[in-house]
Length: 554
Image (tube, rainbow, N blue to C red; front, side, top):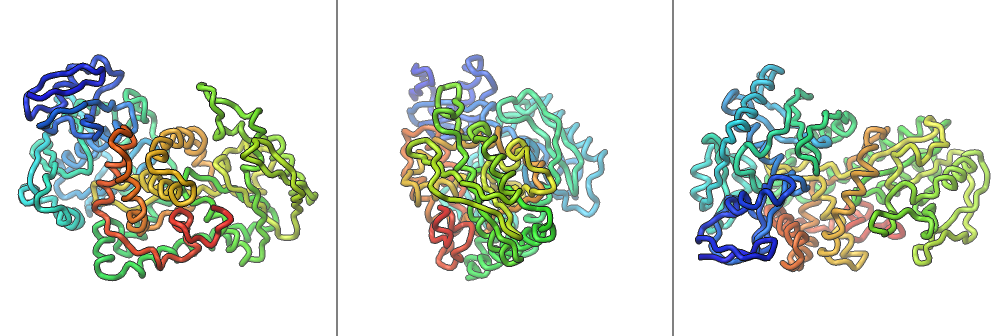
């Protein structure tokens, strides 16, 4: 018999080989939403995984970011299984997210019609109604690749070959269809009742609930500029045959790492030059460029590199730091818990900011503030600014897309640039890499390199960062005039060297931070490292790993 410590501190005796599923079902009434994942000794595990030792257990509900990943992973498996059953000649590739929706591309020659998509959705709904089981089977590597040979091809086969021979793999089966996914599944299809399939582009959209409200299905909100940036990155990376980790690993093994770095960096330079050309074409009226994006998207380096390209076109970029317009700390809004809310729009002195912008655009000389983060007050240290011929103000900050920030400035005088790391990379056609995970790795490495923070503290703070992004950045994505994708197809291979030791140092006692660290380590396990010595010193990645020529901005 085994002894498991429940979340309430009580002990429960169970047979060896028991799973957390029965315990979760017996305790479900004490949770606000369905339990979709287990925790054993602070490690996230599938509810169906048999256990053979004593330990502490916990549970992850669907109304969490981790729980919604299980929810969407299950939906994807259902989509793939039903599509293969109804239309065996159709090949679906999972691409990117659009808000709370997945975009999947149809690579078949016949192409799914609207009626086909409705039929697939109906088949998925039938699986939900029947609570069709999703069975977990643990297998050796050799057995797994033999049983699931039909889907262990191409990139997936290359990845699985990296797994040690003695490692046990988790395979899932739905209606006899096998699947290998990088994370747990719901025990049955009844756990994912809320979704819809919609025709979109060259494939289909799976619309699903927002994190925190699994019972409500919001209407799908199209974001064409964002999706276009994703698809451009996907198409470009596929064109150079480096759109999956499997392909990247082969290029690294073949000695082509330097070439991949050069090509990826050249793409960034070309895109920034194009944006600078757009600004120059409007030089008679455009006088303000606003750069916004989520944490660790590379806003600072983007602003610096764009300014250089603007100078090439004869413009005079003039940087303004939005941080210098923070309200004095005593006037800063507070959160419900009493702490200061530095990320809300009202933390900026909007009246002063707009007054200075208007005066600068009118040609006046303006005394510029400098915010003292130690004292919490704005100071004036003699710095003055006055626009000259061909001057353009460049402002970088999280609220740049919010019209309220620059309400006093006419639309024709400004350009809003949204910056984010929209990675086109995936492990294979089913297992995508989350953009938020790439940004988290960037931030964690930068925090360690420049801010003397360990991975545990970064991981603990990340949920608050994400909450701020959902409130103050993502709702304004559609107002951007231009989207610049800062992702680099090779960056995980560089970040791995820095991130793995940091993640390994996160103690088991760190709870959620430890679970996230283990998930990221499992992801990086499949990535081969690249020597970062050949990365140029103006690369956006240098903002995070060090060695940037833009040292004053770090």
